[in-house]
Length: 288
Image (cartoon, rainbow, N blue to C red; front, top):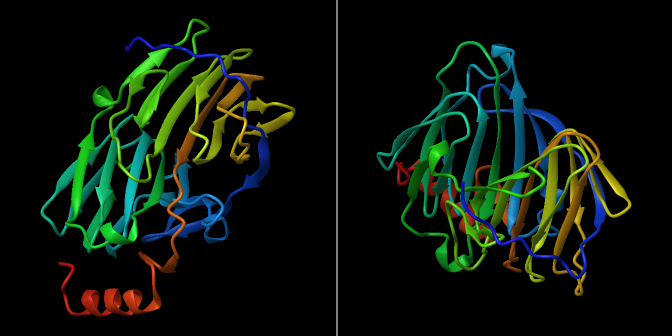
């Protein structure tokens, strides 16, 4: 457990809007909730999508995500419970397990699969899509597994536990840092009645997603399975959270790219012509 330097905020961001995700399925029929949809991509730039998945019914997840392509962005998969095998066309392979995270930069193109390595029990976690700036969209694909033991954690005096997946919180550096978009990604576990504060750069768009219990931000309650989009207030230097009951949530923030977003399924580029090129490259085997 790391030693944190907890700071007192001058002013907390508020919740601008509470969002309920959309139930859907993806891959070979995996049931999930799409929390950050295409309609929110501009508001939550540089983030493109957030899927939350969680079930103890194997029929909801057993088929997984067979081979499929990506180009132009990064995927961050964080597993709360379960076992998922990753393989991709760049020769990377890894097993994502309880509390672990895998980070993939699709760049110019990668074909990968994500297949459960369990036939029973709970499969629960998140996949977040982070956009790449135009100048990096055709970068060489990259991938890394982070087992749970490699994700830094710290605890507050009130017993709040914070896992720092990306960025930095209270002086504790996370498992990953990224230039340009500067993502912050925290998994926060709060006992009932506790308060937690963390700094968020004023330049960043930010949101929380509560996956257990209930959180209050200012005068707004954010219930379980809800996203709270945090306001962009110039005077605010972070966010203050109060757990009205035992709660768990993720907090995500990033610096917007302010570039055109053109998406066609698993490809996210800046122009329609680049999308056509991505489709042509995929059909011609140039992403393999």
